Amino acid sequence: MLLILILALSIIIVNSFIIDNVLLNPVLIICSGFLVGAISFLASSQRWGIYLSVKTFWITVLSIGVFTIAVLLCNFLISTFSKVSNSQMILIDNNLKVITVLTIVLQIIAVIYLYFSLRKITGTSSLSSMISTYRTAIMSVDAGNIKLPSLLSQLLKVNMASSFILLFAGLYSKIILKKKNILIYVIPVIFYAVESFLMGGRLEIIRTFIYVISVVYFLYCYKDRSVDGANAKALSFSKWIVIILPLFYLVKSFIGRTAVESFGEYILRYLGGPLASFEVFINRNISYDTPFGQETFTGIYLYLSKKSGNVIPVPGWIKSPTGLWVGNVYTGLRSYYYDFGFIGTLVMMALLGVFFGYLFSTVWRNIKQHRLRPFPLILYSFFLYSLVFEFFDDTFFSTAITFGSAMQVIIMYVIYRLVFKKVKSD
Image 1 (spheres, rainbow, N blue to C red):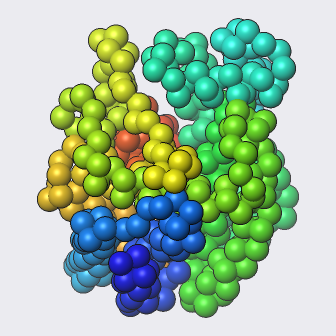
Image 2: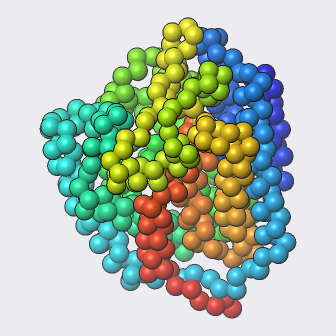
């Protein structure tokens, strides 16, 4: 059954190239993630004693199929009926430099403030111990009691939003305007990576990497009026996986991960564990006492729980029949299935497809007409990590559909309009 899943995903990947051979289209991205997860699951299934059931197979395949249909439908409607903008965006150098310097100053303040706040919360000055203690605390049942100062939380949101806009502006200057000195625009996002690392996050750093790949890819599509060069550059980035995966493994102890597997076993568990855990979840009928929709819209419920004082339960680790720990993530499908059942899972995947399908199709429709819509491209690249990690866990409905995320998007748009000016095309 698992081999059939791999074959089905491979067929969907091949079919996704009907979207003008664009390598970073939503269908190809989400299918590639599930394909990697399925292959890793297959490599470990005998060691875990877990095998894919018919029920899990159909939930997975139909969910991805519905997502694919939603994306293709959006692409068809926008390609057929939408009008291409007759304006273009011009970078405003003076505003860009001022905002960049201001953001760097705020980032320096935020890093120092965060460091001393974490020292106070964890009660230790050792960097490794501080990171691991904080990460363990926020994943415990008492996570609701672990809070950063409100001013710091808001400062981190503003800095993150501005850092990603400035990074786009730097890449735009380098690729489209052919400017050489763009390092200053990269500095804010380096601080963001440091902040993420201090709070025990590794996926946030990978998120930045995905953002850069996406922005660079579509800017080259726009610059060259072709996907061929951009596809070659995107594939060339794959060599970084050889560096990222070992680093991902080596820093695990530093940030509080206690796994003792070899490198190969650790990576296979990380990639294949979500699908294996989802299989166990589906067939063991694991349940929790949670309000309607809370598993899917965790971010909103977490915000409400802070107001009410209620503690949101955290799904536990899955242990395989052979006694090995598999993981505590269950793919993005588990939360939809638990909250809304099989039909609800398909609906949620359709909504996910509409969101990413609309953004992608808007960006690509304009690029084909040699127009660039920077903000839809920024949003698509900013949230693209959610599709990459959908095989791993839900990071869109649980974190992107929140008040904090909405505020970040608003801040990003304000900063974007300060550094880019809309003018009529000739």
